[in-house]
Image (cartoon, rainbow over all chains, first blue to last red; front, side, top):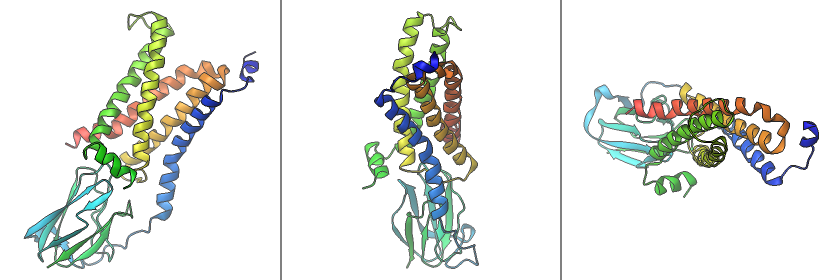
Length: 139
Length: 146
């Protein structure tokens, strides 16, 4: 009897609601899979090319904020040897990864920071969200 | 301007805070749903309202909860979704996807396959636990990190 009730024509509105819910359920795994396939693994850290750990920091640095899936400012110019602080103020984890290798912050959870004493300019990106790119310039 | 930038602008740059607040509201609503369901299944005597009122309130509260969950879920999918590290983020993605799978099962049982109605208490309980897991993997971390 309950199976007979099931055979009545489904309301298309509720059918659409179920389809939307299923779509939202599979969207997350699809995005993860897409990102995994799209990500080029960053070059393994090598001898620091243009950057050294913050322990050797100098003054006159600056701060790069990570928010809204972007680095701000897009280009930060600092004095040679200055310390740059990368502050993840976003809703997602990010990395600061130099294109040429040598700098990799590892995963920075929201609210975390990464400091770096810069001796040479470099282009960098977030290895989790490769569309996030920016540059450090040295004067 | 992409969607995540628009959402950031709409929330005055406080998108994360808004998501934290809404996730907490959703979690509270999910808890209320369980209480109301227990009342109209006559498994509990609290809250002290009639089973009819409990059922009507359950439906209304459910609509609010699902609407908010879709809003927050979409704001995650268009923005930060994708990372699998650290483990907390991966678990959040798993639970976030699971909750919509459970909602699809619930609507199927309610509206498309009435014979599945006997599973509704299990689906509802699972939904509450999944919302709790989502809250724990985001809001709890947000609060303890600050």
